[in-house]
Amino acid sequence: MRLKIKKTGSFKSSKKYLDLIANSKVYDVATNTPISYAANISTKLGNDVFLKREDMQPIFSFKIRGAYNKIANLTPQQKKRGVLTASAGNHAQGVANACKKLKIPCLIFMPVTTPEIKVKAVKRLGAKVKLFGDNFDQASKKALQLAKEKKIEFIEAFDDPYTIAGQGTVGKEILDADPSLDVIFVPVGGGGLLAGISAWAAQTQSKTKVYGVEVEDSACLTEALKANKRVRLREVGQFADGVAVGRVGKNNFDVIKECADGVVTVSIDELCAAVKDIFEDTRVLSEPSGALALAGLKKYAAKISNKRLLAISSGANVNFERLSYIVERSEVGEKREKLLSIEIPEKPGSFLKLCNVFGGTQITEFNYRLAGQSVANVLVGIKTADEDAFKVLLKKLAKSKFKYTDLTKNQISNDHLRHMVGGHNSSIVEDDSERLFRCQFPERPRALLNFLKDFGTKWNISLFHYRNLGAAFANILIGIEDKSESSSGLDKHLKSLDYSFIEETENAAYKEFLK
Image (cartoon, rainbow, N blue to C red; front, side, top):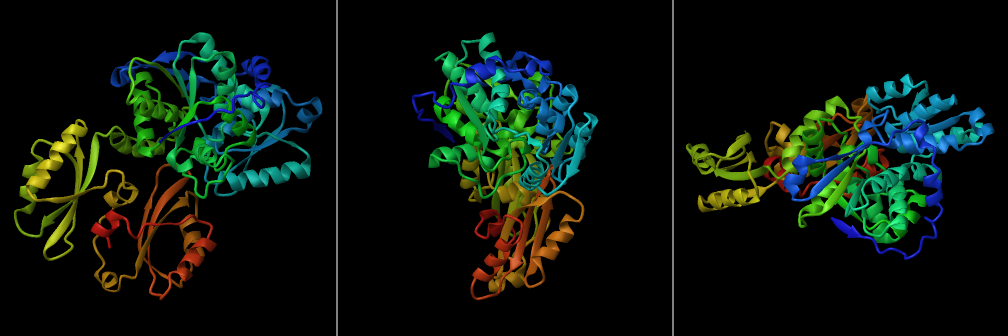
């Protein structure tokens, strides 16, 4: 989705940032990173595409800028007492690096689900680390509480003028180097980087537009713009953990409304495809949030040509365990792989007839299990050259009288079904008592045991699939037998648990393969 921002027409909130950015102290620790021409992506999109290489900072992320600028501007008394913050990764490294440079003590709260590689990176910089809570919000709440008790300065990850100004130096560097750009694309979590870059761009020149980019499952800025006020998301996706923020910052939102030009939202699949694109042009493995701006650029550029576009390559602190999922989903994100459910007659020769329709089309996977006496559904992964080739294949299937459902964008199919081996449960089918839910699951010791204890024994679990994404959270698919006359009892129970359940009982993939 692409949303234009109706600017307020004034710079009431953003005016002060020109001086703050120009006088930022970031270069004590940060570097003026290069701008790379992305030849492969440019050819693919028919536009000149550039990458601002913030993945080349000392901590492999732009977060070093805002954290240092904030801490460097503390009073001598504040510095002496030390600082405290909460983070799941890049901000923590930025704060730790700044405190090491300025010889200031710091304590950083990180969720217990934080990958060990990130915890070790923060400790190597000399910071004390306290693991607390399953997610950023829980760690942040505890850190803020302790900061008030100890009267220690809490370093905000994005919602602070000095942090915004530090991140804004990225925009100044870009426009100093190339004022002829048409659009700059910026990843959005809490909005610090977008606020800083747009504040500088909007007030120093009029040609270059600035667009934020969000992941669909954590689009807090998009929802705030729709409501014309900051709102807290009910559920925040954790795959792109660097931008997994439930509510845009107040200072940030005020500036963005005045200075930014729009926001683009992208899917996880499109994000994974952008990781691959950056690798092919730079040989750098970007973290998901680091490739977010490029994913938005690609979506924006689909209907334009001969423009000069730049994306912030914002970070390269990727977890190695996450690469398999990124590779798997990148083909779908590039629209080169499709996932189909195809109904075939349950009789000899059906497989052969179906394969004859595919002809020379490359099959990436083929999943089947006997489910009934007359017909069966086959889950097929297909590699396609482009959308036109896919349409030709669908016409062949229809001509051969094969019924099909396109499950390419179905979350249940992609995250669970294609990795499961099973079939229909006839005992549950008879009374239609099974309800299906998905939720995110903390990736930590005893997590499954704690989940089952919280869930209790009143309802029977009829299906369970756990998918580790190499992130702080994994995806869970759970079937629950609900034989009560009213669904309110189970609904109330699930809401009382510390997990966010989304019902998928009517999902097409579930109905065709598992129900």
